[in-house]
Image (cartoon, rainbow, N blue to C red; front, side, top):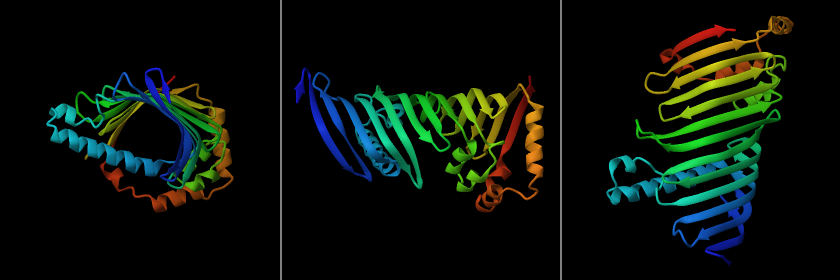
Length: 275
């Protein structure tokens, strides 16, 4: 259907890549490479779409090399002359063995950058994760970077940790209960940086920042500020731990399965302030 200066492809049914949904695509006639995509999925498989998008970016990058594009532009896999507004939601997002609920993605690609207006999903433990920011090419390294903010809150940190290890569900709520985190975030091909962070786990609150470098010499630098320390909280946690002298099954299983060889190369710097 033609609506004004646009062609609308409505009632699109999608069933593939282990994903199922419906929606519409609007092509703007006044801009040859501009479109709006609105899709609602019942299930969305992250791994399948990741493979598809990676292959598409590789093919596009090879095409640009053949067109003899300047070197700094060639490193950016995002096209500069394509404008896409993407609104996607899904009842379920499958990533490996994990299944997360109520995913919402609102982003816009233009001028070789992606603006993430909202990325939201529900995690285990009645937790919500929300992400905002911009994906663009770094002016220094030439690689891709994400710069924005992240916020998450939930009733059970233990349930959130089941994303890493299912046995984390057995962790005590007193130590791994209510979680709140808000932070600025920067991610590139050589580092992860959190700044102006505010973290609260039950009655334990801290702030500050952290930089993790994951190059040939991995290291972590942190500036941590403890706030409003409740010594009764630590006393109660200690008393609960004394009731069971055996190590938690979560840590036993984690130690057996994990490879900590990278810790031999890790350098850690921590600045601690208590207020």
